Length: 387
Ligand SMILES: *Cc1c(COP(=O)(O)O)cnc(C)c1O
Image (cartoon, rainbow, N blue to C red; front, side, top):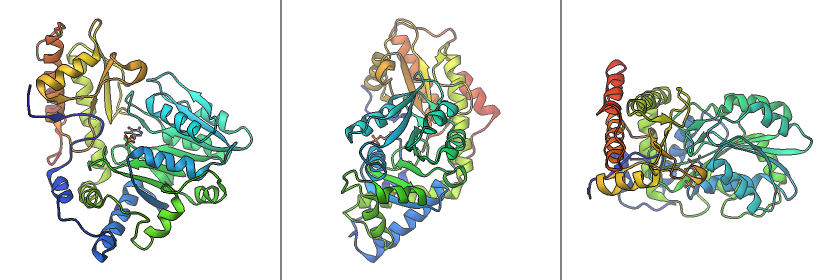
């Protein structure tokens, strides 16, 4: 067993050494002037990454806390809510809405397909639809749904649009205000290359209006409580101070580089990953185009169990990829290429995959064919330095 670990997953993702160092600085009091200033700066930078001027509330919790906050703050018993789902994270919304006693109207696509904006708008246009909930990057399948098209289709219905951008924010374009997305939820541990533990929700004026009328119970995840404290650089409860410090550093790196340049970097890593998967003689499960910039999912060859491959990679080689969720368990493997990753993460994942498959009895058609295809692509389209 290798003691060296290579984390090439869609979250949590590796964090840059300066971000880790920031997290390890001496503890500060959360009601000190220094921390208040730091929190306000962090929120300001986050809003730039969210591409919004809406309020942005921060919670200590994983990304699901921000998802849950949307349900608890926006809805009332008996509300009509449309949940569009084509994967594991879409299903999480279904469970969450049901946990609050509301039966959602489902607009489903098979796992691995794209959500259909026209079908979603059709469901949303029925009278009294309070909200429409969609996933941006469906991490379980690698599909990045077309939120711009969905937002445009839903807008005439007047329903509040909520988008789960936990694994997309900062990694692919999400123009919150320009596209008219009311609520965007995200978390610290994916494309934002920070430790897990912070969750965020951006809230439009319209969403505040609905939140003011909503009657579902909430306390820790109350948007109003959070926002009223935050305007003063305060938090209602003790935040994960160290993660705020780390996130502030990570956001500075992202903004210094420029969001568009980060998106391009992810697209390039994804392109090389797809080339490498084909070079290994394997089939892609995620879409074979630039939209799938965050996660590449590949189908296991016949007779090979994806979970076994995952375990061999992890325990023998120290390479942590991700397996499949739900019906895809054992059938696919997923390679994350978001956040603090570069071409050698991709090369490592492909080389490891070839070795692990070989150990399980599956030999790719061309030895080293995955790595060769990826490095050829990198040679033709170099990753910018500082990748
Ligand atoms: C990671 C992720 C989440 C949140 O998961 P947590 O474990 O609660 O942080 C939600 N949605 C998507 C699409 C994700 O990838």
